[in-house]
Image 1 (cartoon, helix red, strand yellow):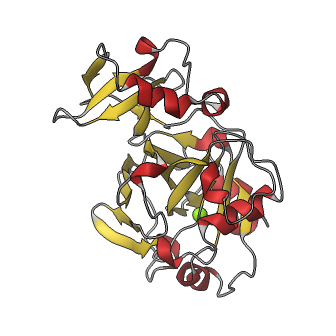
Image 2 (tube, protein in one colour; image 1 turned 30 degrees about the vertical axis):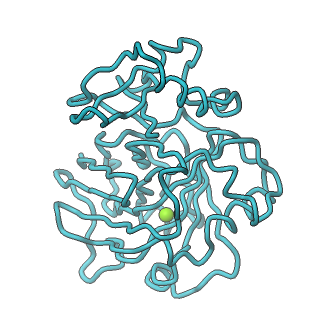
Length: 285
Ligand code: MG
C-alpha cells in the first residue's frame, strides 16, 4: 500500500494512493473510517496499517482523482526526525575523507518537513543550499534496544527524503542542526510505502537531478551501516516512537563537493527519486 496525506499544508487528511483503475486515485480514508484521524503514533500502534487493508476490501470506497491534489508529508509530524550522516563510503570521502566506525546520528527539526512538490526556500543571507537524496524509514512501534536480527520488523514503511542542507551554516555552527533545519529543508514523500512492496530495501537505486541534470546516482546496497544496524544503534540511544522518521544517509554526488559546486538557486527544480518509492520534485524559491 501507498499511504498519502493530502490537502492544504497543516490540514492534510489521510489517504491511500491507488492505481488499480488506471489514472491515480486517492481513497479518502477518514471519509470511510472516520476514527482514523491521521497517520500518527496512535494510528501506527492501533493496527492502522491492518485497518487500511480492510478498507480496500470494502465495496463503498470514497475515491477521487489524484491529479492536481497537493500531497503533504505522508506521516503526521513525528516526535523525532533522526538522520544518519556519512553512511555511504563515497559520500564520506567527498565530505571529509573520514569513514565513520559507528553510525553518525544527528537531528533535523521535524518542523522542516514539507510535501512532494512544495517549494524549498533559500534563507535570506545564505547561498550554499544543497540537496541530499535519502531513503527514509518510518517506525511502526515503540522500539528500544532492537536486535539487528529482527529490527526490520519495526519498520512501518519506507519513503524518500531530501536532507536539504545549508553548507555554510553546517560548517560554521560546529554541529549540523542549524544547517539542516531551516524551514522547508525536509521534503518527504510522496508516499509511505509498506514493507511488502519493498522486498529488499538494501538494493534500491537512488538519484538526484537539478533542472534535469543527474547529480547523485547511488544504490542503498552501498550503505556503510545497513538499516538493521541503524535501527539497533539508534534504539540503543533513545526509544524510537511510532511515526518517527530516520533518514539513512546520502550517496556521493552532492552539489557542494562537485567541481565547480552545484548549489541550489531560486528558480531551480531539485528532483530526487528511489525506485519502487517514487520521486520528489521541489521548486527552489
Ligand atoms: Mg543527509
